[in-house]
Length: 124
Image 1: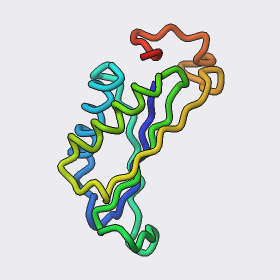
Image 2: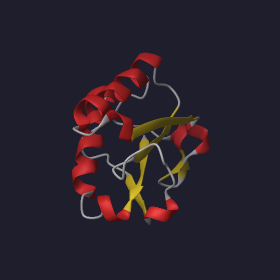
Image 3: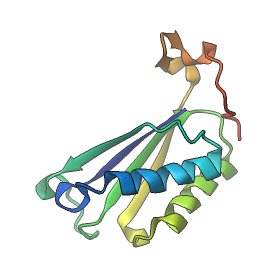
């Protein structure tokens, strides 16, 4: 399981959510083996005054991947590398953070996630 939050400027990224979502999901599929149909992306687009980052351009994106614990350091590195390699954007304008938590901290389909059988492997 992985949920992705994307922060960026509304005046730059509004209307481009599918482009960004497709790029990020392709990275999650290739690096972590997430199924093609498991996409949970939230866009938090902000007014220019609400995203203060004077050392970045207006294209700046902050990406947070919230996921179950269990992925190896190599798998996390692979995801980070894929995000930069497949982006087509200036690397200085992209920051990614992977936030892990135990399955027991998630509730999915009415049960704690540690009681849920997943059709894909988390331990990669």
